[in-house]
Image 1: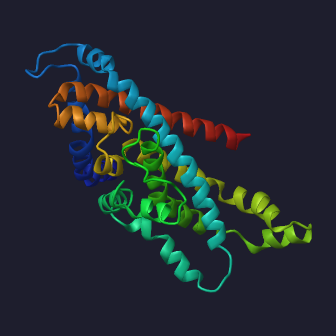
Image 2 (image 1 turned 135 degrees about the vertical axis):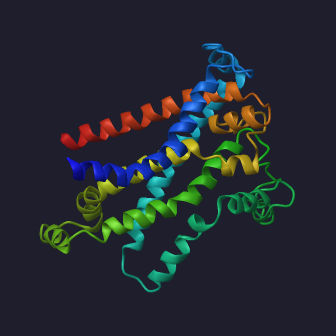
Image 3 (image 1 turned 120 degrees about the horizontal axis):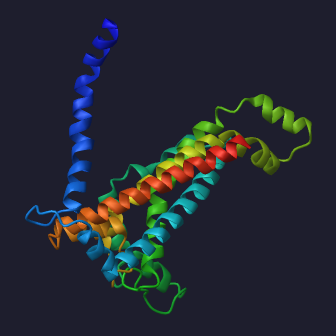
Length: 284
């Protein structure tokens, strides 16, 4: 009993730090969401006000497209890259190092670089497409409402697919050679090895990485905010950016807190449903 109490004393500093860094901000955000700017209790008024804003529905829809588009292409491209990098070829170490570059570049640097590359008049992307005649005139990648969100998703995929690739590659290299040899004895071709040996063996890695990507995508604002700040006409406005703009540009901290509470609850539900779905699949 005494040793158990001693153990609690050792972890007490860590618990206090966690309480200050996590529990207090969460509790204070919840308090802000049900009070007004003078601290008076207003019930659900802040929730009704923020849900009544036209931008909230637009931001939610954009967030769904942003998360779904980013995750699908990041996982598919990352897994294909990992399978390629798992093969033996000359210069493999160099290619592996180059593949990691987008991931290690700071988000703000990547966003600024892509903003210049996609500039309508001076961007190198339009120059490379118009010079050989592939397109008749420059495209407003960041100003056209039809292209700006897909472009943001593409930049996010470029930024994060190396993380998926390196994690899946680590999983591929842990597969015993016996499984490959058994598959070849049974006459399996290369893509059959990929489908029946590689992918099932790295499935836990893909599941864990996908969950991390979902959480990061739900909270990620650096690329979009640095390039478009949610524009044009809210076409790239996602919920985290709406929370930031409501709090620090419109100084409506209570409404921003109410939206934060709802967004936090939805994110928790998404993660919980994802884990339950995968656990059910594994049990079958």
